[in-house]
Image (cartoon, rainbow, N blue to C red; front, side):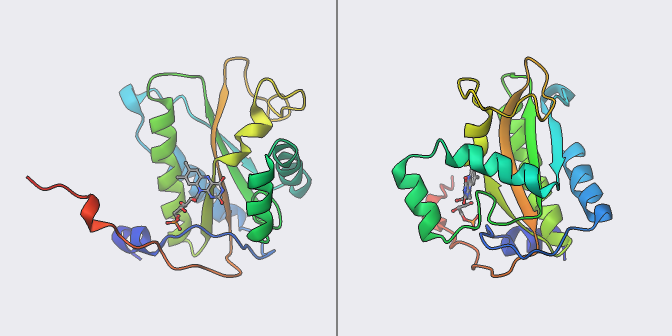
Length: 179
Ligand SMILES: Cc1cc2nc3c(=O)[nH]c(=O)nc-3n(C[C@H](O)[C@H](O)[C@H](O)COP(=O)(O)O)c2cc1C
């Protein structure tokens, strides 16, 4: 699969099978993150690779505890196994704050999702998990993930083998301006 094919084939997976991700594939996902560009080559991103089922569930539970009724209902409507849709691997990207840290994390996120696609895996970017890392959350997981004092959660990615897949979203060509 070439890069363009991976870009077009990727879609958010919300139904993962129990099948584990091979350790060597997990390393390739990390490599994709580490190889991603960062503004002024700051390389401030930190990647937490989580395959411990209990820890994944703990992050999910602590976010669920902070979801409003609407969000809880939408997860129920999606028949979500948990916040990460039953994925056996979760990657959390964090950084000390800077002007470009969020953009750097976004770029690394897509690199990782495309690497996953290339490896026959599926992914779903999960923003909702930020609730498990909010400083005003007395049950936040920052220490458990050994984050430094100044380090902040940015985004997480659920990765695994799809049990069911949805089609990639339609392209909105009317969102393009040409000059
Ligand atoms: C920054 C960001 C945060 C997201 N957070 C969530 C999330 O918490 N839960 C979820 O199910 N999907 C989440 N998504 C996935 C989007 O809903 C999905 O990308 C969008 O619906 C388009 O679908 P596609 O990825 O299949 O093209 C997130 C995507 C992005 C880019």
